[in-house]
Length: 301
Ligand code: ATP
Ligand code: MN
Ligand code: MN
Image (tube, rainbow, N blue to C red; front, top):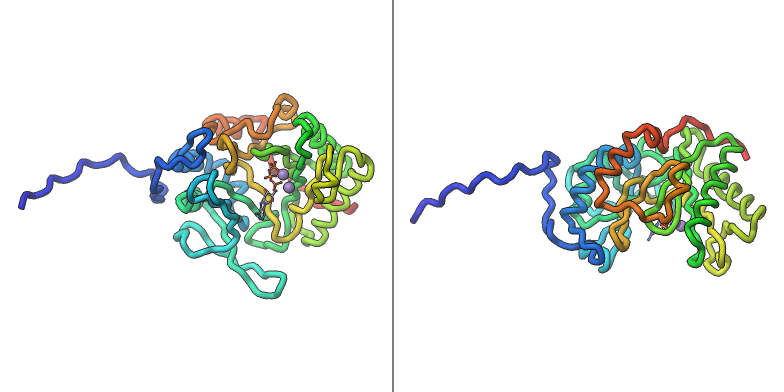
């Protein structure tokens, strides 16, 4: 039989060593982006995302058939992600332990994308000491009929009230409807203290301006108001991580912004996975560098 000629050398695979299958599969049907394009986004964004993602327990939103089909929230390891996705046993409320996931590098991110992941959500503490929170997030969830201007003024009011307490905070567009006000904290307090601070701070705001804010989850009580979702700040809860793509229409991403920029932005989903280049150059610009980092202990309330 004839000797098969050697196949011509293919373009070298990216040096992550992670093979993305079905690159042409459309996973954002309204805007057309494919699994390959999502992987390319994460490969480019990896270096600026990792300071926020690495060494934190993460949960994934996986949509193996694309965002318009069934998606699921995955907290625990199913053993199928390969060697770049690590496990950390964490004590559960019932006294048992469960293996949570954490990632240290871009290949870890890509291994998750290969498994159909779109979104990355993180704990407010690090794998090195999961009992010591280092990040507080106020997730501003507007009632449907509120416009983005109301979300922005709520966010800047939170910033000012936090500043009164001596805390520096940062704004992140969620990629969905709202803004997250992020408060980096020096570890040194426990989860009960963390949650208690977030709850009391949010309740004080809603008590002062009950027509604008609510601190209770109930949708019925949210009519015309902004829910300050402080429940992101309890042990085991997560919030979407900076630069995570969202499994929503148009392939938006969660994007850090400066307080000054926020004034001129008119939606929480203006950046998408097509903007990797813009987002990386923004991240290294003077205005945005340092976003999400501050040395500050949680004060008493
Ligand atoms: P938006 O601005 O549209 O509200 P968001 O990311 O803030 O976007 P929320 O619905 O407010 O969305 O959810 C807040 C956080 O709750 C999410 O970022 C996520 O970490 C967590 N979360 C969402 N869905 C689940 C789920 N099914 N199980 C556990 N946690 C979830
Ligand atoms: Mn929200
Ligand atoms: Mn919420």
